[in-house]
Length: 102
Image 1 (cartoon, one colour):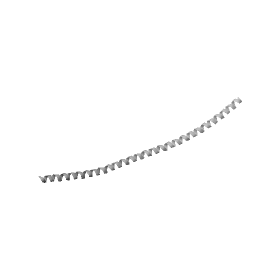
Image 2 (cartoon, helix red, strand yellow):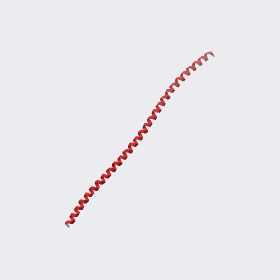
Image 3 (tube, rainbow, N blue to C red):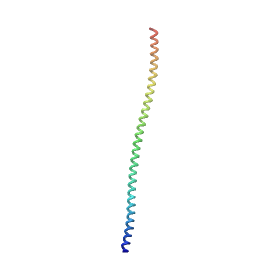
Image 4 (tube, one colour):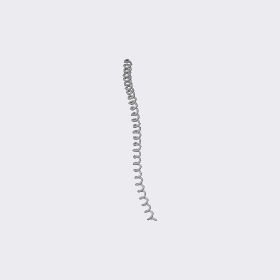
């Protein structure tokens, strides 16, 4: 009976040691897998942020171009208004001249 007790104790200790070794091995392997998955996720996020930044930069360039076109149009409109004002003055002078003659 004494041998059975020693054998069960040895098997119990051996089982405990094996459980610890296998548990540590599984933990180590899962940690590496988790780190790899986290690295892939971070890489994906950084890539998506890069795409978003690129899109924002494109929008800024387009907006700056539209601003330039708007400024150019306002400048041209001001010139057209000044020209129309001068034309009206000339027409008024011509009408006054023609009205006095007739």
